[in-house]
Length: 390
Ligand SMILES: C[S@@+](CC[C@H](N)C(=O)[O-])C[C@H]1O[C@@H](n2cnc3c(N)ncnc32)[C@H](O)[C@@H]1O
Image 1 (cartoon, protein in one colour):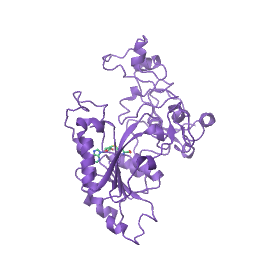
Image 2 (cartoon, helix red, strand yellow):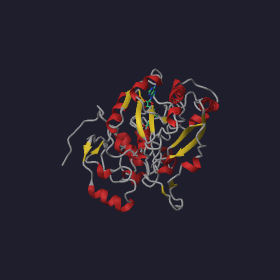
Image 3 (cartoon, protein in one colour):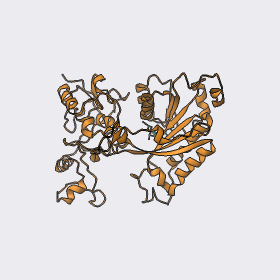
Image 4 (tube, rainbow, N blue to C red):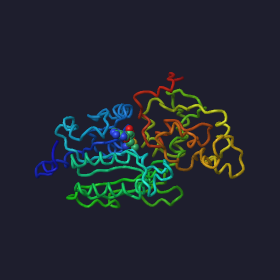
């Protein structure tokens, strides 16, 4: 490992003639890494304790020298040294799990109020900061959900900032509205950006430029309208619920029409759909007949709450008070709801705008702006693999 002092020494040439390097902690399958690589940075290592996430990472980032299946509560930063060799770590990024702070997950109604419900996942930011303390990168970026700000009366949000300052960093919290950067969903994330104190002050307004405006807002020079769900998935072939073929062919006629309507800015420039040979993971899970009938009762963009309010009889057997929003049909001309990690289980909140089925893994990946050639190494064992039809 090189120290920052060595790196910043006159004549070292570091950081001026090479791309900035980073390590990705709690990397998952590598979405964060992908964004940084698109921005010109070079990933040195990724760590996550989920084996299939790391396999997927390796499959999609073959150029990254180190991708480890490790529990970060048990894997000390020093243990990474040998794998990194003499490489200097300029940036550390990571998204410690957000379930512990998520507003979607309330324990005893107190998960984001004053009362603290102990959840060990909330402590994982400390593991992240151990790596910051050891490698002293120029910059770190920690990503989490906005609920982190209010959890336990703000105790965690304050602790991250206080601890980072003690490590010699200036800390700027920055909230990202993903659709203002071209992601077709209502995703909001809390970034905590730390820069070493001796570096110039990081001013978000100077360095972070939103590229897209809200749907329906006038588009000032240099900005475009947000990407809708229809623009992200509208060229994909129609499916019937339960059609689980993993490999398909693209419908090129539909693509042509799609490009005529929306242009290439998302389909080609972001998803690179024209570079993928086969359409993978566009598989529809089965739904019960009762669910399918309820799906058809919903108008485009409507929740079961709204449908019940306009007098529609829904068949779902769950408690009407607590599960009013259980079903949501998404709207082609709007942003998609925030994609969740357990989408497969929560598919009822992600019903296709016009078809009676939930969104497919490929559609969810597109809504997260993963390119079409992005794939999982292991196929889901629940998904039958059937050869491409002609
Ligand atoms: C919010 S996801 C990260 C997503 C990732 N940043 C991306 O862009 O794809 C959190 C990840 O933390 C991992 N994780 C949770 N606890 C961990 C631990 N103790 N050690 C290593 N990884 C852990 C999970 O497996 C999960 O992949």
